[in-house]
Image (cartoon, rainbow, N blue to C red; front, side, top):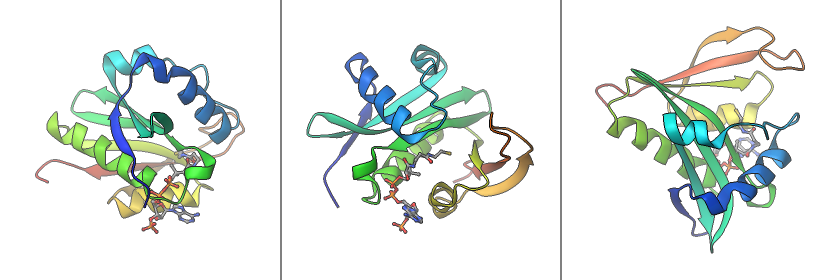
Length: 147
Ligand SMILES: CC(C)(COP(=O)(O)OP(=O)(O)OC[C@H]1O[C@@H](n2cnc3c(N)ncnc32)[C@H](O)[C@@H]1OP(=O)(O)O)[C@@H](O)C(=O)NCCC(=O)NCCS
């Protein structure tokens, strides 16, 4: 496994994150508001030799929190970075006493679902036509309370 450091977002990471987002999502979430996440949640980045190779965004929803997006640069996938990012996002929520960590994932995105299931997330519902191309989303939840 390569040595990446998971750290808090800093403003110099902005373009790297947009680039990773563009590469990972179609249509891209590029218009997402970094400042919103920084104010009402958190952004963690995976830093490899000073270069951002992945990120996760989390929103504080009161009792619960929600993973809004997670992505790893293509050539760095399958190296445990997504797993590390998710571990740190979970820790961030636990430290704030969140009851659950929620997320939505495309029903076709088996790779991401595998990662989430490995972390203990379970499917609790489905949102029909959640994505702009009409695909449904699974709603997944990880119970944090008492963990
Ligand atoms: C989903 C994503 C973030 C995973 O990041 P990653 O760094 O490649 O994942 P990891 O190497 O940490 O692997 C963690 C787990 O994910 C699953 N996984 C990773 N790559 C996989 C693959 N090619 N096929 C099946 N499962 C896979 C496995 O469960 C793996 O655990 P294991 O190594 O013990 O088997 C990455 O694939 C990505 O950026 N995808 C595009 C964006 C995306 O779909 N984001 C999720 C939106 S909801």
